[in-house]
Image (spheres, helix red, strand yellow):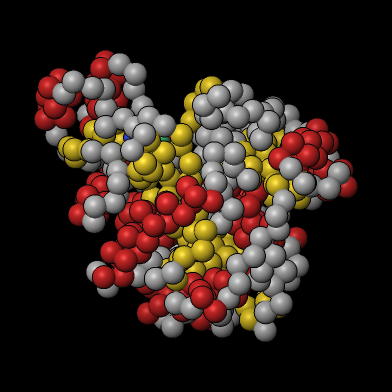
Length: 427
Ligand code: AMP
Ligand code: GLY
């Protein structure tokens, strides 16, 4: 029996801990820092070490003889936590810093894609605002403006007019709205088509694709309002079929893994490819080097195989030795966010109805929650993901929305159309 550490404290990490707690190989599950939800998983305990404290996490793993550390968020991956754990003899699920740069630097990712002839949008990199503005004035189209560094999913502006593009350039390179993440920007050809994500377990050489899920990034019904970390997700996605998944594997995932392996930094962990299906085929918009949030909360409950076995196989290059089997049903995860999300946190407010949601057949994953005077409170940001499964997406959504209706906290926001509209899908 093994002790496993999950690093992170959001809804994604609660889902990871919840699924791992069902593994027949695990008798102890540490979550750092975790949240009130992770503390309730079988055999789990929260440890008050932040996801950014790499030295503290390495010491914890050694002290507790952790057999596998599962890294949720991108920041510690980019900061090299997996390399630090490897140096201390601790196995980890997640890529090393060299691979995690694919997410942490969009400029690096673009160069990697171009060097390896992996389809992507054309882009130019700028650090100087005058050079970027001159380039904008000279080109015939209106490009997408992207901060190169990690900006919590908010560093991409898709302008409709040249003026908006010019303002975004100023915002990033002059006003430094994204700090050092926006020291370099990309001006990128705008792609048109259907947007999809493909997530795959990778062992450095082979990969196994997860059931395709569709995220809803905008705050409001009908894909209106500001971009968020994600307001809900459902699977199966109506825009994906087996042929497209096979094509994406062949044209994008395989060459990516082959190139990283050839350069001596094999990708081991979860690769998340954000793609646009254009008229000339799938093209990469971005790579993330970790599970998606809230995609994970919707998809992972469908895993029938042992997640620990899969993760160890990824870490040791033996994915072909394990089965990766999914229940052939639908799943919907609906995010409930605090009143002022995505702009501010606000005061903590008490959450009611969590037990009633569970009785309605939902699994409720925690993110921005805390215990105050013995009661669970919403403490800001994305607070909960209410997840339910069913024979089809409509049935799963119906059940998940009954769970949402059972839960109350002051100012709670959610989208009423997760899994119910076909937003973004051409009629
Ligand atoms: P990213 O953080 O790179 O995934 O970008 C956030 C969102 O901006 C994506 O999910 C797309 O909807 C949009 N986006 C990014 N790059 C492009 C592009 N080249 N063309 C069109 N839309 C894009
Ligand atoms: N849901 C999008 C992400 O995790 O990046």
